[in-house]
Length: 595
Image (cartoon, rainbow, N blue to C red; front, side):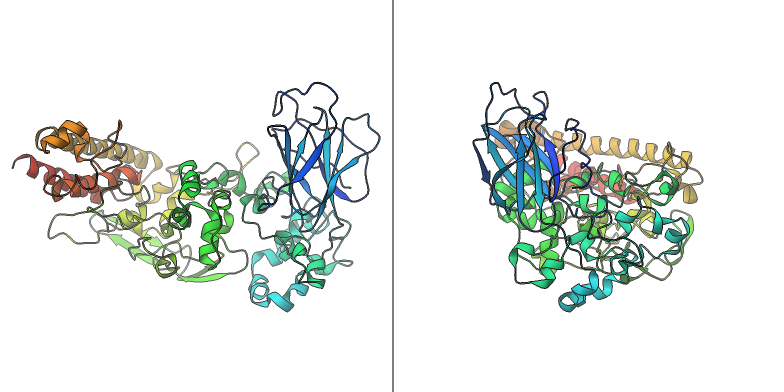
């Protein structure tokens, strides 16, 4: 057995235990103040139940990817015992327990376990647990080519394959630094894994088995369903290497905290309301899951069966949702060259990416084609659309909608000025100057900075926050000027929002049919499920909103209003267009008020 695994902060410290044959991770039952109530009396293990369900996802990042040895990942109370989870290579596991440090030997619990979860009943409060599996057998990616050449062949062209032979890695002494090897080779630290370049050359670099686990047994008997390698979509898999936590301080400058930043973002988990919807409405797994669930989106893009509700809710928008570890993609940069916006008096040059660029994302950074995620995914999906816009679009929102306001995802269409109701005669597409930034969304929402010191680490941009106005200085003169401009715009937009909202409320109280104003008050202009501007209860039903009860002009005005409000940028994405939408919305309501 290797050294004790590092436990997450919410588990109590564990004490050293004797080595046992086999490879295993271990975990102590938590103290009563943490997860379990105090169990009094000397209760022996009464039983262990294997839970037949989808294996849990990796939740604790491990250097190198899928751990060659199983890692205990969780322990929580059930109605009459505890539930244990672990994660490791494909295959069978044996669970062990001891009822205290004074016990000399570990005792087996149940038989071999193909699942990675077990529920134990009736045990004392100071029990320890560990899990063992067969010794991992690594084989190297060349063995995988016999069956998986279409995947393997492009993968060897990615930076992963050169992780051990890169000039910077060599110059920094990585090839002989044991702390670097787990993330730059296969199975380093495990007896059957990488040793050095002369003894185990086939295990150098990041390969299939880093992400899918040891596969020699699978290669020898591919028909054995118990040894099929893992397909893990959770970000913790990538987080084992793409972070700053496991990196020697001497090379911290070259390892931005990508995983740590992502783990603070809203992408990290499926929204709780959406997750609950998966459980009650199976149709929402495909419709909402396409942009809220990493497992659902992966199934849709790979044309695989959709997961069930629990699996759909298990993984948010993780690394593998936006990045393809297997391939490089070539994109034509639609924004290369000099860009001049006469109206805004801006001229700037886009040249960072060049006219053609490659990366490991399947969609480009920028596009100008309006996009709406409506209808079947297979016919709607367009890989030529800006990566962020694949989900951050208006979903086909229309003034005719009666149930909900425009979804709070219309950023891309608003950036292009290609959504909402505009005055007659105006152009149907009015892109913002911001739309001409070379990386569009990523230009502002994935700001990066170099490592300076431990107190000022590198920034990778994976929190997706507009964390600094420094990026604005190129066009706006300085970060301070840009910040002041954004503050002024936010004030102006908010004032216009309040003006339109007040006009709609006035219509609801003075011009709406008596039945609607009596039943709903100021919500008479709203959708059946009102937006954030009208808390306090439901709005008119779809039937009650039929014209002339709620005129088209009112529907168009509320549509424009919520497009701007739910965009969330306070107009920054497309300032002039947002003001145009709000001004026209108010004009539409005033038209109804003066009839």
